[in-house]
Image 1 (cartoon, rainbow, N blue to C red):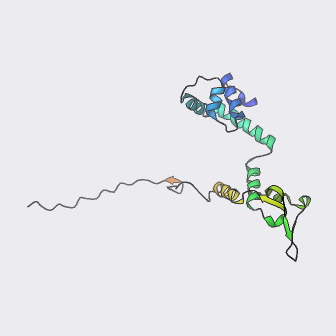
Image 2: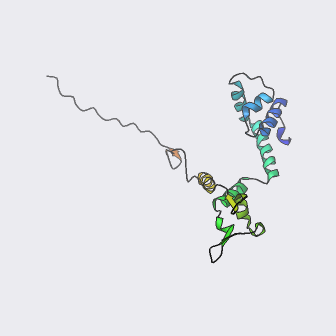
Length: 177
């Protein structure tokens, strides 16, 4: 781990366990690294380690190395999501002039259509072609581009709304009789 410069042995173990955990769970990495942890202390300790600049840098370097091996960065991920979101079943099947259905041979499929196919299964009547979930890909892209949000942003031009206190004079009370 090249980016482990300046890390303690336990911090190095934490980084290794954090990167090795499929869910990148800081609590589990904290415990597996050998830190004393009881109750919430593992959660708190893992969170504190994630916020240490040296540890965060080592984790970022490890993730970048891993993603480089996969040839999967943010741009590539968006390209793949776009392929799924813009997939079209008509690229995988053909209808002749009599309305008979035939399938495009796999070697004749373009890359985008091939990537969009989740499975091909034989049935009694031919083949069943199932595409990846187009709606899910569209939702993911819409969220990425902030077209859909789960919260209401109460800011003005990126600045928080200022609360202004308005004081009104109290109307004169009628005189007691």
